[in-house]
Length: 331
Ligand code: CP
Image (cartoon, rainbow, N blue to C red; front, side):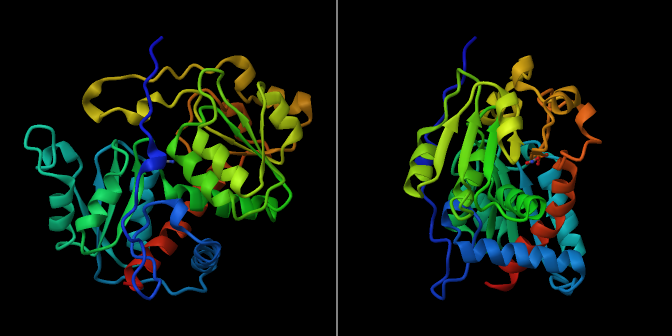
């Protein structure tokens, strides 16, 4: 089987994400966030959930949703967050009908320069690494990276940290595992945010043909977080406090939407989580997943107390409200 090569997302440079006063202008990469940013976002999400923070803070504002790649959660999550804050959304159901398509070829830079004069923020998903950073370079409004190829998905990582802090109480001293393809953009952003949480160790259970990316190893080494690799998901279910699952093969993530490529989603038995396995092992590990899932978590797990992935989705709306509120009111 031929596997896709992965671009070098670690080399993607962000434009200045902060204003001169230190305020966050864009959300492009988890690398650019501080522990204070993460705490602020989590607190704001809590406040929106509990009703402490007023809604309608973005009344009359406009959020542009530019999704060049498919999405359910991120697209509808930002839309529902914007609506809850009193803003409305503009966008195109099919970005191939825009001028920034393969045949006309208007640049992402010009697209951002134009759309940011029609909207107060741009949320963009694209199959190219650095697409969001390119748009931020010419946008006069905040740009939110909703997933750029193999690079990053920072709002999802904020959601995941928020959900794990909630689920585990704290990540300090905990053992956090990643099951499945380690190359994905969610994993990259989440590894960046885990550097603040002082976990005891990060455990990867990757397919043998997709080793842990080198930039993850260097990030964890820099923050003196132990990295361990295991070859069977049972080990993670028994020894770890939380397991963040991902599809066994994320190859479709780097493909342009029109390529017709179908990712081989089949997950070998020793990598898949089932209710039978959890019960047989007596595992109390919390199961997280940014979704969509394929066969790496069997639906038989959904009713178990271990399953946190739909709660993760419920919390996502409040985190995306926090992201929109902060970026649109701070600039
Ligand atoms: N988790 C996530 O990014 O889901 P979508 O691809 O559906 O947006």
